[in-house]
Image (cartoon, rainbow, N blue to C red; front, side):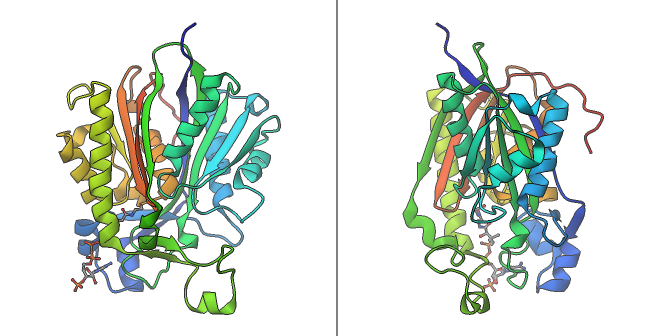
Length: 338
Ligand code: UT7
């Protein structure tokens, strides 16, 4: 019997209309376009505005676009997973809310949080369901309203993050496409460098936690930067070596978009030219769990059946990993893409 693999068979995305530029940020905190461009590589990011709007509102639009593009009937979906760090609320799961909004009624689903590695870790989870044959059609959506946890008076973190949603359809294939290999890691001792202190069971929301600004992202940039550079480079090389991938036969590196300098360092470690690296950080910023699917969405028209892709991430936890995919389809021109 041939091995069943999990293949991405469609990609869609959504980013909100409002664009927060470096110029506008420099009127909010003591920063400049030049500092943000040279230290991080972000020109602008999209922000979700509107009372009561949450992550599921962006995810809903991405998933509906995915259904339209792939001709998927929501009744045929068996599994829907939302991943990220900014759920609509603590419970019920954001996956449940999205399922209801997009008309998915015959599926199970839940949320997965692995920091900025959420999409990568979730892809591995979905692949396991597909490989056993128990799931035939899965939707994985990485969506984040990072602006809901960013402190816009903290100049060291507020330029980095943006909002957005990316969704993929995952189906089984007996051909030699799809997910081939993965290496995933966590190291919880890194949690002290990147976290949101309050709002969970240890420090539920009180007047004091709000006044102490503990519902915002806390990040020590330099230790996170160093760990991201070394771990993403190491794990990408290891995955490539054990699958016979080289800078020549690797078609695309799809890295988490946290800092252009981290992306360049990872590319340099494997000797890959910039033309083979998906880069969206300049116009989306760091959208956490949404960075990888938004990369695939932006670059979909350049992808060909059989292309070798390595996806790699690093995030809060610490969490990091790399996944090797053989791309499963030639994209058709989508005239409705924004
Ligand atoms: O996605 C999850 C994983 N997260 C990451 O991978 C993020 C990793 N970290 C980073 O990307 C970088 O560490 C940051 C972008 C967060 C910060 O860049 P950095 O080059 O590490 O800067 P720094 O924190 O060492 O600060 C350098 C200087 C400091 O000034 P002094 O002490 O040298 O006078 C900061 O006060 O830059 C100053 N600075 C700023 N200046 C202008 C910090 N933020 C700003 C700013 N504008 N926005």
